[in-house]
Length: 275
Image (tube, rainbow, N blue to C red; front, side):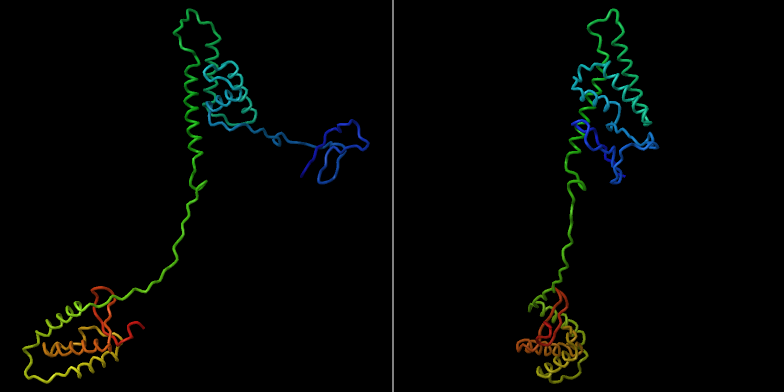
């Protein structure tokens, strides 16, 4: 419900009577007799204090007082006024507020009462309170300076972005002649184990072995290098097969393929590896 309240016309009585208020767009010339405003409808908001020292510092700064020469009687009066106001508003008072009120009352009484035989070296009753107020002010200022610094999730918001997925086909390494010879040496070492089983020699043809290798590559897209050799034929047989492979490489009829360096060597028909 919106209520607009108008004051008296500056020029005195107006020709047309001003409404007392406008409620939901309807003017009211007289206040309702049954209008009731509960006590809790009006709230008084005080400054937010973090403790009795914070309240004292607020009272001192509000009146531009010198913190080294506090008028203890006036500050005590204002402090007690705030305490009474907190009680009237049914605010829960912490024990340290009451302790500070007692301390102020003690300092006030010590300054008002005559001090017979007082010497110049006697400490000011306000000295301890001033020391605590100065220390509290320093820490409060440091806390405000720290709070003013940029803070993550307040002024600074870290962001992160996942890189897009990158699919890159691995480049097949080039097969060196050295690796081919090392693989052939392994085949020769296994072929030597069956040399003593040969009883008779048969003529071996490089052309015939080339045809056998082509048949194997037509049956499977990739054939491992050592599987093209029959070690039971002995050294002569594997040498002829190796010569056949070299001839086919020279004529660009087959390709050598490796998945990664030092991986097993495979043979395929020319052009099939790229597919």
